[in-house]
Every structure is written in C-alpha cells, then in structure tokens.
Amino acid sequence: QVQLVESGGGLVQAGGSLRLSCAASRTIFSINKMGWYRQAPGMQREWVTAITVGDTTSYADSVKGRFTISRDNAKNTVYLQMNSLKPEDTAVYYCYAAQLLGGPVDYWGKGTLVTVSS
Image 1 (cartoon, rainbow, N blue to C red):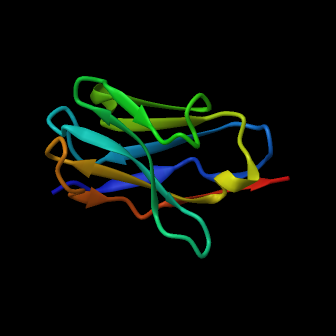
Image 2 (image 1 turned 30 degrees about the vertical axis):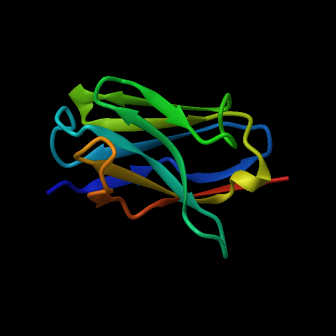
Image 3 (image 1 turned 90 degrees about the horizontal axis):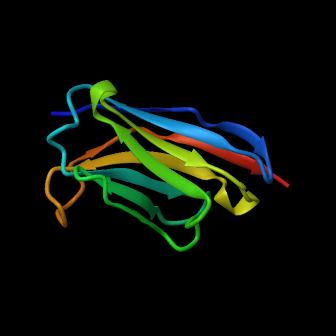
C-alpha cells in the first residue's frame, strides 16, 4: 500500500510557474511508473505526464515543453515543474502510481488545486 500526498498548488497568474510535489509513504524505487493527471471543472480527468523507474518521461501534447516531471527516489517524491502556465491549465492535479509499466493506476493522491488567472 502506498499513500500519495500532493502539495504545491495555488493561485498563479498566466505565464507564471508552480512546482507540485507528490510525497509517497514508502520507497518509490520499486514503483515502475508515477505521474500526474488533472481534472478541470466539468471535465473528465486527463493524463498529463509520467516518469518510469528508469527516468523515461512522457507528456501530453498540451503541456509538452512547459511541464517537467522528475523523481527523487531518496526523498520518495515526484515533482511537476509547471512553467508558462495558461488559464486552461487550471485543474485539480492528481498524483498516481502504477506498479506495472502499461498497467492500471494502483494508487491515487487526493489532489491539489492549481488556478491560473488571466
């Protein structure tokens, strides 16, 4: 079992930056994939980015070039650096962990709200 706790959300102006953190309750060294989804008001949850245990990263087209995911196994934490934020990035951001590459999400965090004002 893994508990994931997100932090770092808040209100930022368009063009600004935020860094989200996802702290895990145990070592993430053996978790094959971790990443982020987001859910805007009235919208379905959408995948944003992921990082594998081998540090391979992938991004949704909508955030490519602006967001960067990283993981610090020593701190059991995954980060999401978000730059050049746009109002359409406004959403609740959820951290997730999947034990198997290509497998389902096994664990979710409760989310952190990011609001980007125009």
